[in-house]
Length: 182
Image 1 (cartoon, rainbow, N blue to C red):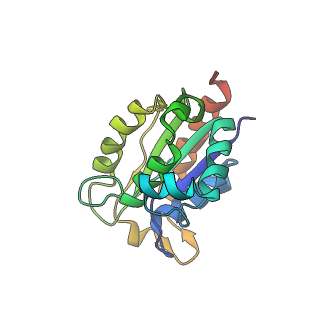
Image 2: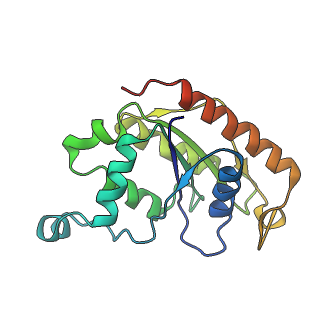
């Protein structure tokens, strides 16, 4: 089975997006990684100190992965800055973008307290995913709104949302398994 990697675009300990990603990993095998240790992208730092080891490790894992699942909150009508920062690091050097991201199936999901789910966040990802040459998966959407009522300290507790999540990740995993990346 092709490996699916996943990350949350929120660093908050009680993040609904991290909890959503963990719930997805209970349904289908997803290797969750953290972007917490990624420094802010700075080309001067990259030139003087090189790429941080945490970024190098994840780039190699992404290059070998079959798919990527991003659980991104919505901040001010767009993706989170830390999630975009992670992608900015992972997409360097430019010549490696096809090896790391080329034709990589990517699914987007998200949870927020707002009423719109994460529709605007997911839309803001599309130009980025296109620029990287990924294969954005549009088989199903998962935008969780009113998250505070659906999650508790143990994670996702709402059965209706869990059923939607199960359909979403099961279909994405089947797509990844059938997709020929190279």
